[in-house]
Length: 185
Image (cartoon, rainbow, N blue to C red; front, side):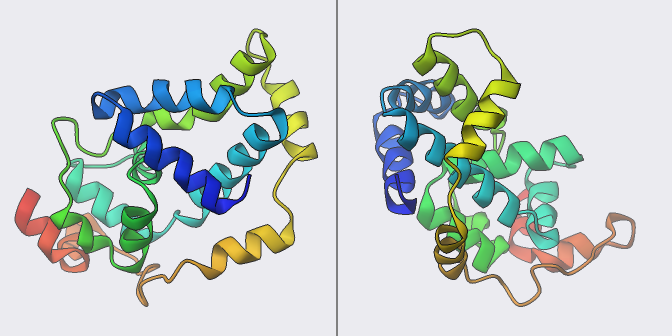
């Protein structure tokens, strides 16, 4: 499993899911059908992308879209964003305000289920009850290497102000994502 296969699996599941809410279950099922190495590498790529998307201006976008956004809410938002596919994910990191043009559906930007896909697929694949210690050990043994991480990072072109601080009290958040503020404000 490489980063291209990671995104292909998500895109195919997105196309085949009957609804956005069905994506995590379908993706879990398809991921569980992969061999153990591919499944665990997919989990590693998910973790890397999730971590690399922890950016202040993206949080501002999530704050506007979801009408407030806690730490957990931002985790769920980034899971949702990965579930939207590579093009949307990379565009949002390049310009978080680009999400103003994205169709968000009835439950906008809530992707808690995406955070559980890898673990659920692993437990299903192994035919075992959830054991997160065992999952962590297996993931460490199959984690993407430094070269994989560098290649993945090279595909991300962050907005120049992606780490811009904001304070909702002073209205900074609307200034960072004005199109989103106009759409959801």
